[in-house]
Amino acid sequence: MNAVIVPDAAEPIVRVRGLVNRFGDQLVHDGLDLDVHPGEILGVVGGSGSGKSVLMRSILGLHEPDAGAIEVLGIDARSQTANAHREIERNTGVLFQDGALFSSLTVGENVQVPLKEYHPELPDSLRYELALLKVKLSGLPADAINKLPSQLSGGMRKRAGLARALALDPPLLFLDEPTAGLDPIGAAAFDRLIRTLQEALGLTVFLVTHDLDTLYAICDRVAVLADHKVVVCAPIEEVERYDHPWVQDYFHGPRARAAQSGHARQSQEN
Ligand SMILES: Nc1ncnc2c1ncn2[C@@H]1O[C@H](COP(=O)(O)OP(=O)(O)OP(=O)(O)O)[C@@H](O)[C@H]1O
Image (cartoon, rainbow, N blue to C red; front, top):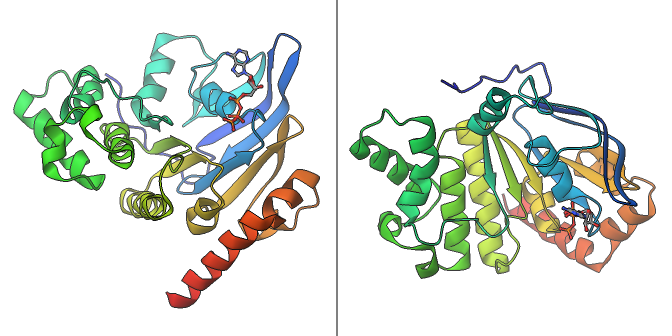
């Protein structure tokens, strides 16, 4: 039986060392190092094709890297054993970009998929109640539980995906561009939801994003992928000042100025 792992507060919850990924002649990662600290929201940014998704998939054991070491909650993610794979799956929730819900299952049935897999001993009624709790926790109305994904808006589908990611109470949550495709008000609400859940549940969050507002609003640290590695990983105020062409373009372009002034305005209001 795979149990929930309580993260060691003194150790990185994810540790990546010397990661190498290539596809044919194309080098994606070349000696990439990264630590994710317990209890933080880490934003991962980088240009299109810089390898954010491949990094996330490598950490989750969904992609086999060419070289390097990856530890997740003390488990060797590169170990080929089925038990290591299940331990990681049991302790991580993942929200993929499109929600990745089963289209023929209702929201409630989708949320119950991991519960059925890891807790087959639970009676159906209790599994339903647990799914309902996660649906509500994710900010959906209770009646969404009986709807099919096609009956929901894009934002609601993301919330349903989040409910499923939280089904097993994982200590570690991976979010792949959670605000992509949402309008600015919906995106800000989703950011707030992630921060609230992270604080209430003590989660660690690995968040791949292009959304500058998200970085300013909720990320404790930001890791920038460029030149096949993490060139800087620090609180956003430090990252903004980092002397690297991509970082300077990204954090000092017109969109960044809008996000920064919005963030400053919000901080003043609070
Ligand atoms: N299975 C694969 N086969 C071949 N090439 C791949 C595969 N997966 C990813 N790549 C390549 O690896 C590079 C990094 O891809 P990845 O999806 O990680 O980028 P990303 O930083 O997430 O980009 P985006 O911001 O556009 O989503 C890209 O050039 C991509 O084409």
